[in-house]
Length: 407
Picture 1 (cartoon, rainbow, N blue to C red):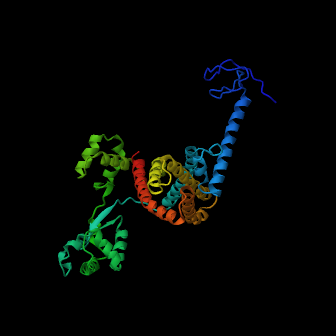
Picture 2: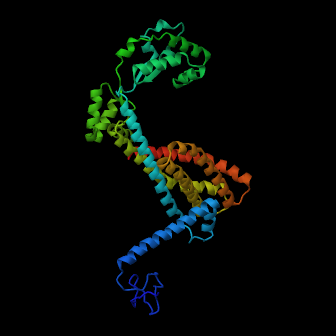
Picture 3: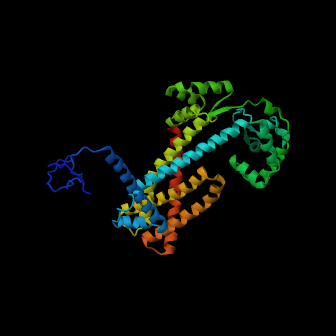
């Protein structure tokens, strides 16, 4: 049944002159129809666009998993009508991935908060005490000159946790003692280990030093408070601190009054680690930041592909491959996350190692098909590319975490 069109001499969209037989504007493609559009037509357009996208999405996913690398090859050959455009495909999939990731993080925070509320909580703050203080500052305890050894400090949050830590060190193997010495820049020689063992054995199980050392309530680096009252007052008033007040506080605590330090004091001062809502907001900000850094990661990956897999000479060819690969990875991870959210966390946990293995195999097969090199060269270049990719992604993730916290 043909449409009943009321035609116009000019296109209502671009004012292009139309002939009587033109059902569509040859300039912009708009339908030549001056009739008022009924509501049913508007609803029909919505469903038509949705199912058109749905069909393209199905074709794209089907081609991606039946023949790895196919959509990249066909897209670069100009066969694009049947598939979702690469950027739109990535945005759609990444939105679902980070939505599921946010849902899982919220669930983990809520579960952790319930378990936290079941137990008793007391904020002792973070404290440090040296071996010398635990020995009551009596230097005659050791048969050798062990001044450096006695300066080794232990960080603890309660008396019980410190006693357990000391007990474990007294019976610890050489590897653990070496780690303790390295942290204090002391040579890991047999003589130093023996001095450390003999010194630790002299520490009494009941020490007056533990009762006299006051806890420090830390905010950031050396910005600490001696009493809980000072700490609580700072947390309450930090919202109203000016930059000058924060700088003054930093200087008084021996810290540099830089922009980064100022922001860290403000953010850590306002952040309440015991408030689930604060933790959720921080987690969502970090996830959002990571999702944005992926738009940097994909072009950087394309540069690595251009340098290592140089068969294709144009940068955009490598960029399309990079976008498609990251999108497929997100689809695989989203599938596991969906199982974790809606079916079983334990079952999903067993699937995660397999998902990484699938991604690895998928990437190698896709590289082989797209760059037409031997399996040996493909695998070798894959490992060559993996090293800079790992360090770049690590740096970007760290940057995203810091930026998410500061934002």
